[in-house]
Length: 503
Image 1 (tube, rainbow, N blue to C red):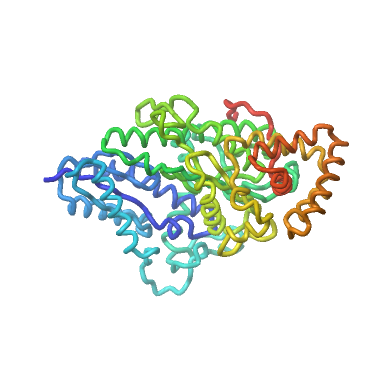
Image 2 (image 1 turned 90 degrees about the vertical axis):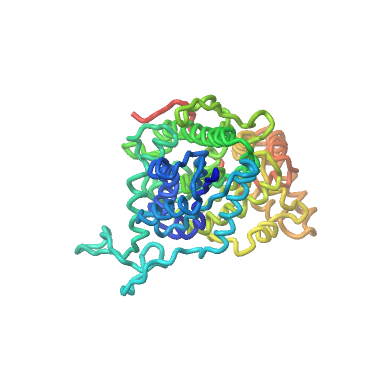
């Protein structure tokens, strides 16, 4: 029998993970898929002769010394169908003979997965029911079960679909296990349960950011090229390096932010970590954190990803790196959306993904963009056009692409300018800058006046403005606009030890 390469991959995540506003259900769907590939190896590895090449996110790649492709695929599909929590996920299984080398087989099996995905419905059709009730959470699937409604008296119960109930249950109980397993932090650390609790700041010690969140989306730049490899062991090593990078930086951030929260960011008696991991993929990550932590969190990621030394993974010591083998940069294109905690999570995630397209055009360098959503939570079908309409026409897309490695310098100069620039007059200047070209002279005059007033408060105001422009890699017009946009969201976090942990 031929040597085989078998790929198992969950696709169409919008219909299984991001199909509801309920954060426990979103979390549960993601964690179920994250566990799927590892559980499959444990359950069927010996039976089907499968050896793991790598697992990452909702993808598993396995090697079989010999076997019948149809038999192995049927066994895997049967195992999936026997797990109630996975029945409503679209999980594809394909196999390819290794006849022309490992890289060729890997490309073939991935192409088969994409072809199968195009032939599959985006939503797994639920079982037909006589009930006419709709799931209260996803508003799509028929409700086959109920669960208690704690907000209503007299033992009221809400209708839920089987798929949602299983994901929601798993999401509630698995959160601590995820951070313990992936980031190596203590299993008894406490976390917020929903976005309302995550963004609560009733005493307003973080300015006007009560119930504001930052959704952070990170996508590896050309990581797919890293996984084009003609050696099975080398491919496994590359996967371990990427996972070690991700796990070590999450470990670093969680330790640091917990210590910071104990001092400033949490007003509760018991320290609680404010973070939701909404995607933990092979090269994609989505986090939701309080708005006052957003800038700091992304800066920590860019600063420390691949630079945290050795990390234990799968019984091996893996050296983290931001440039694999010295010639393949491991960088990210990213987006951060600042919005209200109850903004439609599906729309916000899709917006962040779309916004990251521009930074990713910059190549293999850490680049990010941001968007502030205030009284509205949607930019329309064409977010790019809407964003370009808000700025001077000659600035173009580059205005929205900021250097990830300069986030600290940008923050430092924004904080200095906030101490001396009158915000009301800054707002007037930005209005002039973003209007018609006929107002260029008026804008120039206003800028001169604003600089003069700022220098009365701090003689170094001009140097701060020049510093911000240099850190952005843009001119002073762009610096003024970014200063106003980020005014409320770039703050000074408490000085924190990188080794802090809850008592």
